[in-house]
Picture 1: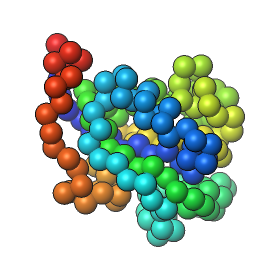
Picture 2 (picture 1 turned 120 degrees about the horizontal axis):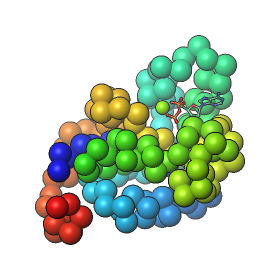
Picture 3 (picture 1 turned 180 degrees about the horizontal axis):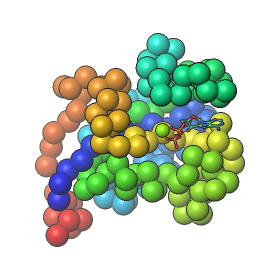
Picture 4 (picture 1 turned 135 degrees about the horizontal axis):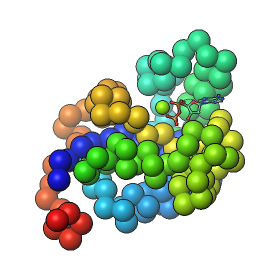
Amino acid sequence: MAAEQTYLMVKPDGVQRGLCGDIISRFEKRGLKIVAMKFTVIKKETAENHYGEHKGKGFYDSLISYITSGPVLAMVLEGDNAVSVCRNMMGKTNPQEAPVGTIRGDFAMVTGMNLIHGSDSPESAKREISLFFRPEELVAYKRTADEWIYE
Ligand code: DAT
Ligand code: MG
C-alpha cells in the first residue's frame, strides 16, 4: 500500500443540506483514513487561490461566491491511490452525468451545486492540502483496521 493523501471538501450546499455525515461515512466505510478535518468559512483570497485554474471562465465569479457563502468541511484523507479512488466516489463534475452510487450522482442535481470538491491529481492534492492545513494539523497515527483493509 502506497499511502497517498488527497484534499476533500464538503461544499456549502452539502453542509446546509446536512450531508456531511453521509459523505464522511462513505469515505470511512470504503477504507480511507482520516488525517485532518476542519469546519470553516473560506476567505475570498483562499478561494481565489484554490480555484486559480478557473479564473477568467464564465462561472468563476459565481463559483467564488458559492464556495465562500457558508461553512465547508475540509479534510485530508489517505489511502492507496486516494486521489483517484475519491474522485471516482465523487462522480463527474456535472451531477446529471455522475453515475448512481457516486456522491454527486446520488445527492446532487446541477454543476453549480455539486456538493463536494476533491483533488484531481497528487500534485493538486499537495497544493490544496497546504492551502487549507498547516503541516502540524495532519495527524500521523496507526489505524488498526488497516490490516483488514489492505493485504
Ligand atoms: P471538479 O470539481 O469536478 O474538479 P472542475 O475543477 O472542472 O470540476 O471545476 C471546479 C468547480 O467549478 C466545479 O465543481 C463546479 C464549477 N464548475 C465547473 N465547470 C462549470 C460549468 N461549466 N458551469 C458552472 N460551474 C462549473
Ligand atoms: Mg477540480
